[in-house]
Each structure stands twice: as C-alpha cells, then as structure tokens.
Image (cartoon, rainbow, N blue to C red; front, side, top):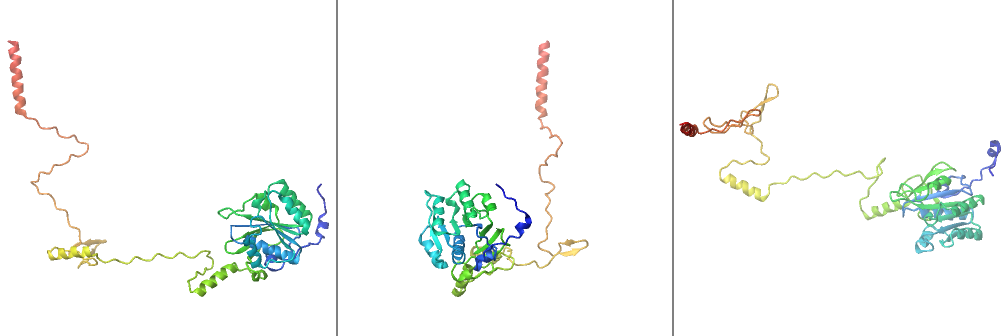
Length: 349
C-alpha cells in the first residue's frame, strides 16, 4: 500500500547521511551517503573498478560497519590477495566471500545474517541475473533493512555502456564510471553533486582526494620514465592525445651512376645535354598585356613545320560530306557497250 505524507512533515525529517573519509567521501558526497544507498560502478576490463570498490568496502568497514565483498569472479585467488595487500584492505569488519551459482543469491543473504553486514558488494553482475525476480527481492530487502548495495559491471568493447539492463542504472542512487586514465567520476548521483577523483591504487593513496585527472599510476609511470632517461610525452592544455608530428621532408637525391655515365657519353659525342638545376641564359620578357616574347629564349616553343606543297598527303573528308566515288576505267566500259549493241543488231536481223 502506498504511503501519503505532507511535504512539511517530510521537510522536517533529518538527513541521516554518512561522512566517509578520504577519496570515497569526496566521490559520493561528504555527509550525503545514505546507509541504504545503491550504486553501480562500471568500466572496461583492467581499469581499476574492483580496486576502487574494494577500498570503499574497507573504508566502510572501518568507519560505518561490517561489509561483505562478494568476489564472484576472482574468489580467494592470488589476484585478490594482491589487491588486499596493496590497498591495505584488512579491516576487522571486512569479509571476502565467494559465489556459488548453485546456491545463488540465498548464499549472499545468509552471509549478511551471519556477519550483520551493512554493505554488500557484488563483483560482478555478470554472474547473476539482475532482471530476475530473486535479484529484485534481495535488493528490496536490503534497502528496507538499511543495507547498502554496490554492483560492479563490465562495459561493452567500445566502452560506451555497461553490460546489463538499462533500468538498473535508473534504479540505483549513484552511477560511477572508472576511466582509462585512472580517474573515477560520478555520472549520476542523487545524494550529492557530481565529482571526480583519482582511483586509489595503494594504501598511501587512500587518504587523498584530488581533482587532478592525473592518476597515481600515471604519475608513477612518468617518474620511472624520467629516471630512465627516456623521452616522455607531456599533454598540452585542452588536448587529450599527443599532437601528430609532421612528416619529414624527403631529401633531394643526386644523379645515379648510370645516369652520370649516359650524360658523359652524350657530352663526348658532341650532343647538347641538359644539366639538372641549370637555367636558361635568357628569360622571356613581358610585353604589353602579360604577353611574353620568345626572342633569345632557348626554351621558347617553336612553330610546327608545314608539309611541302608537293607532298601526297591524303586529306581526310570533312564530317557531313559524302566520300567521293571510286574511279572507273571508261575505255573498258565503252568496249563492253559496243559489243552489247552488236549482239542486239544480230538478233534483229
């Protein structure tokens, strides 16, 4: 049954927001994090979303209450051990749980009852069905019980959207995207204004919240390159990628040995040769309205010679006129005509 409450009474109710320290409070909002919040964290593979949420769970366990990190993908593998050691995520109230697909979501609910956890992290939703009724019932039960729920999702290959139902992004209170440059930003937050931080990749970084998009991993990489003496690229203001270098100009090539030999033989035979790079002795002079005279210019165009008058060049007929009829031998025709007349006279007699 729906509830009806006057707006004045709703406005008088206090906001019970949590004040998470360090970069996690700067990301989700100082004093604005609700105890039963829901958040979706997504990024491309290997960018740092699990590292970000594991540090958040450890901070929650230290300052709010017990937290469960359901590691459905990595479990208790060496990669998970390395993350907990690197981040110093060893709070007494932090628990790392594996996920059994045969048991399903009921196993997560049982862990919450055993530990009294106030935060549950599911890494990742690829192992469950967010559109199922069981998932919806669990999310509703956690919200009513004042338990925060954080989902981790992978992204598509192009990195433009997370893999999962679109309504999941509308249902949660906050959506956090982890970028390739090591930053995490809230693209949606009902609790506080949007913010951006560096992802803490170590225990030392967890106490810092910077607005500089340069991540600790990037700073360490730049420091190693500088110490080794290698050239590093420094981004310019307003540019997210290095500027393209102009292609180098091709050097002018000289004459090949074969060409030099040919030129030498022509010179010895007395023929005039052209030398590369040489200019004519005289240049065309401008006359009148932009015309040039070819006097004294060896490169001037000469007139094409006309054929002699006694040449037997056959002229091509013009279009539209009939071709002349072929010539016939008139002497043979007159002889045939005389013979035909003689035959006709013999027939009459």
